[in-house]
Length: 252
Image (tube, rainbow, N blue to C red; front, side, top):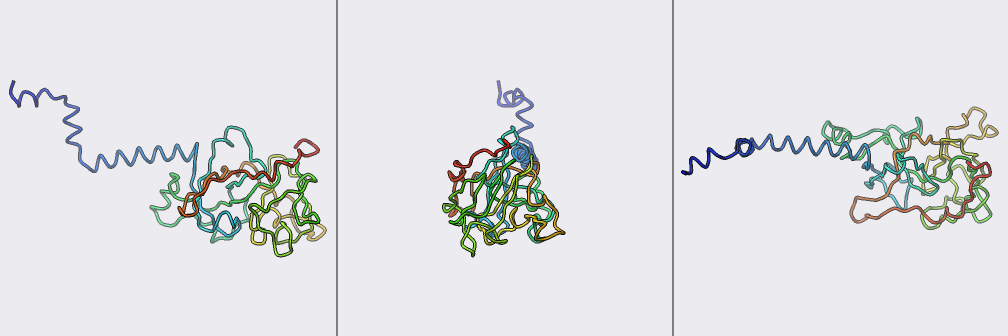
């Protein structure tokens, strides 16, 4: 048998594979990679960035984070102490922080989960359904369901000497409605969070009760890793501070 005969005997599919242009190979790889990225974004993980200083000292503006979605999608809701990403309830973000990526390539990458998304907030869950949050005890600590929590390990107290927000150290919120959470930034003096949006008709008759709570349906997932820059890389875990909090009196 000659070499020509051997070439003729080669399977046709192998000849076509060797003859495929480079651009076709690249297109196939791109389509497969995009499909996998969409599956990962939809079911498992998504990239985001920190839009402000509200989560300092742990998370700094423009840090890149990864959010784990699957546990919430399987029915386990947010828990006290979780750092979560959620969609803007409607009036929490200023326009410059609500904007997503600009440019066609960046927008395409954002859609498939390869670029940090805009229009979202990152906060820590302080209260879940049924919880009552009070600020603050004699030592400046938040109280959840009547029990003070020690947040020195991750949060910064405000200028008034307590772990309350910009609105001061004397307020009570809750019970948190079913299907909602009460969230706060770790940088308590620079976070427009649930406490900032807290409505007390005695102080402001025009405010709308309920704006301080975030619907669980808007929660994308739980932050589990600070990915970039590499000098900040770390795994995020739920702090032990919330282990002492009892269940709400009504069971949530």
